[in-house]
Amino acid sequence: MALEDAKHEVDGAFGRADFKGLAFENAFSGATSFLRRRYSKDLSGVDLAITGIPFDQAVTHRPGTRFGPRAIREASSLQPFDPPYGWNGFSPLDRFAIADYGDMAFDYAHTADLPARIEAHVAGILAAGAACIALGGDHSITLPILRAHVAKHGPIALIQVDAHTDTWVDDDPARIDHGTFCYTAVKEGLIDVAHSAHVGIRTVVEDNLGIHIHDAAEVHARGPLAVAEDLRARVGGRPVYLSFDIDALDPAFAPGTGTPVWGGMSSAQAAALLRGLAGINLVGGDVVEVSPPYDHAAITAVAAAHVAMELICLWGWTRA
View 1 (tube, rainbow, N blue to C red):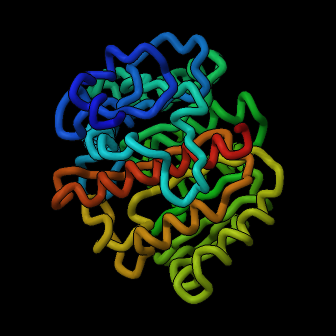
View 2: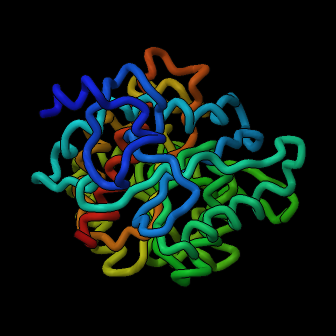
């Protein structure tokens, strides 16, 4: 059936009749919405919306993540033919109405307006009754996204998978910095610190503000499943937001990122970690810091597309 469908399906991003279902159009052609979902600004009946935030003006080193959402969408085109591997046949594309909400529009010359615009953009998705998974963009986008989620759910448990904790001190409210979003989120009371954690860290942290750290060395030594078990116990049944900075992966698996650090997780470890979190109450998430100009053979974009699919699975697992 899939082969027969592939002869006829094209540009399902615009033409597919339903938000549910696998997709069988050729992976190498057609409009590349995320996972071949239908583009829609009307979220009536939509369970989950994917949106891109193509902003990269808050980076400390290499830019280029403004092209991340586009690259992740293209890399995802090979995935919607089958249910995702490792989820015991669970097929979120069949089970849930998932739309590609497109990228957030903004004026690149009005950088100071970005946080409020991002918060309003995501708040609009949540107000429509859909959950939201965002494609970045640099890691500064997570702070306003968190604000939108906390306005709906109250303070949430954060699982941040990253090479850096992003808790560098920043008490200037006018600054927008991808290395300080977590510091500001803690200071604003957005994060339930006692039930939050960082995973994959491998840079020096002077003050992590009480958030527990599972560094990359621990993931290597104990294994990702053991760390995932600890994370599940830490967050319990609380609402969880999961932010995945692609530099959590070692540069061998994700070269296309702005601040690469050696000694990170492999893609196999990341997959095991995320699947080991099945059962958490994920209310939203993002994958950020994909910089296509530094990405050989789309290695990083492919990894990010798979991370986003795992986030969809985590969100859907407790709602199926």
